[in-house]
Length: 209
Image 1 (cartoon, rainbow, N blue to C red):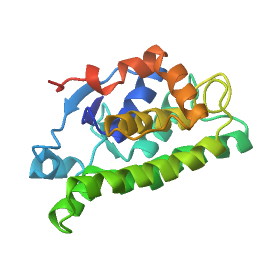
Image 2: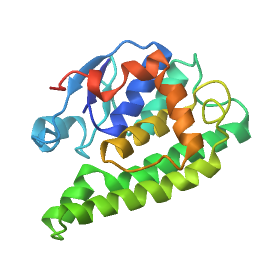
Image 3: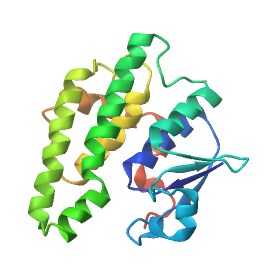
Image 4: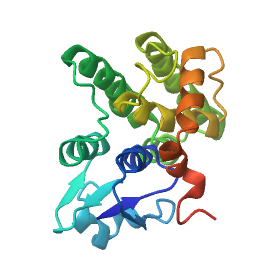
């Protein structure tokens, strides 16, 4: 299978973690977002939303949206599970994942930041203030939602950790201080020591200078 990915984007980062956790072999096809490759006709035929990630299955089927792709992987490759089997635990883990993937990250993705710059005339300090506000507001809530102590919920990684680690990476990448979220910082340290998370890190991906 092929993963259409961008090294620094948090959405494909999530899928890379899930693929590595489950030991699923895949080929990476790098989509260069800064060069606007996602808007080219060839990629729009793969993903009409012009976003990453896209996962091409062996039969040519294309899946999009990171959480939907991870849900597919959970059903197609159930071991090890990344969604808890207990209904309440599953709902709690998924709530954290969606808080990040549906509320924090969309407000700070490249298209939003470019719109603030190009259409609304916001300078770099204003864009940085926007980014930091939504990151910190969202992660402050996540800090209260997770149990911590090891991974977000218990001794094994779940969909919550898969979404949290890329968001922490981006917060640090954009110099947003999260040191006052001790549970998040501790979970990130545990997760990034896991080889599957380490192999998914942006700096070790194809296409990184």
